[in-house]
Picture 1 (cartoon, chains in turn purple, brown):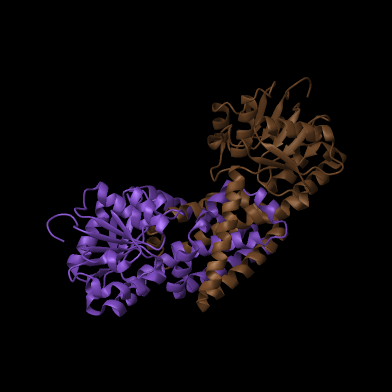
Picture 2 (spheres, rainbow over the protein chains, first blue to last red):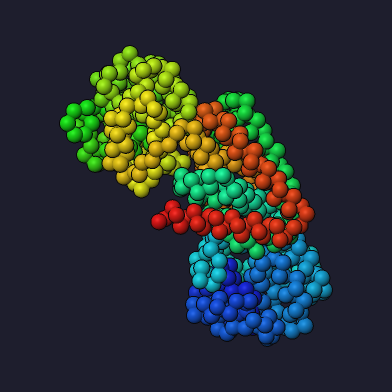
Length: 294
Length: 294
């Protein structure tokens, strides 16, 4: 990287998140050089090129990364380690590498394992944004406006690399916060990974109901909202569960204990208890929504 | 009721559902007489009058019902039995009574208990529509357009009463289906009552997380959608749980067993199993959404 703006970018994974970030950076005038896109699906790469996300396309990560000043990994978490192993000996020494994965401790470990001391130029990141849609076709530059991005650099991460990634997220309209990878994983298990499990599990349960078709026939808008996140990408969520399993199991255990208590209140016909839980939950959520909109 | 349209209406409960139905009936030109509104909150009654939902307001159900050709009960389920006891001796013999409650077996039992043979003119109903908002201020006439309304008349319900209620829902733009009260309660436990429990319980769990404020600070739009139904009226949902407890406990048990299996797959790092459940859920939900939009 020289002067202002980032010279040349390798975008590994041209989906919703990576595609939207690059579109936002282009819109903000932050990219002075070409974007080389890499992915498994030729059709999706073609879409990314047609939509002006990438300038060139390849299915070979080493080809994409060669000469790049900035390498963005926007792939399912399980692909991070193998990808870093694949590209490490073609990375420019000055290159900054960052990712967008929804769990951070495994990513940090993967970077240390694959890059050794080179991990100092790896900046682990996670934008708290997304939709249930996937692929380059779903990307749009406003995705991160007003959203938060969490960076989890370690003590050994180069500050200039962190600052560069931070400024690129801010250029996309995001607010950047830093925290430890462990803390990130615990917080996200509660607010994101747990709700996804609950939604996937509900749709799964209902799909095996004896009168399934009728059950869905009488579901309404509330159900559609509630289960929206169950349309998220299964491979990505498989990897998140595998990467953040400990924190997720802990969150599930806490939730299941509380749900068992609520079930007992329903069984016992304990109206006062039910109303107290529902009232408290409503109040809590309203505070959250007010905060989100402020 | 004489000629076309309904002559005079008593609306007991001037909230989102009752208020929206009356607004829709007015818009459709179905009301030839005045609407007498009854509620517990004078402020909400005043809002209902200002918004043109009701013509007169009272906190006395007997006053509202006297002389009415159609009596709409749009109140929390627990209020149905006491209300019917209160109004039974001032009901016009020809009057049609209907309700909008989210559970139907207890309503049917309440009507039989309070009205005896007069229960023949009671038409149990449930519109599958709503928002998390409450009160007359939230009412709007388009709420039921394209939505389904379930009627659960029994063998002893007068067909002319059912036909009248059906035509009034159709005038509001709804599609009407009939089924048994028991079947209604089983289906709705799965698609509506169960998701509400899960959302309330999630917000409740997170509200007691040690770093609660931070947890909510990093929740995003997916979480907001997922928990929207946790902003629903606590008293109404207390009553639904009490009224449909058996079916709801059964649904909760099935769900909790499935969730425990998913938790075990996370704990064991069983990626193939996780991806299979997520993929199946996504496919099922996409079919459901396509059906909802068709």
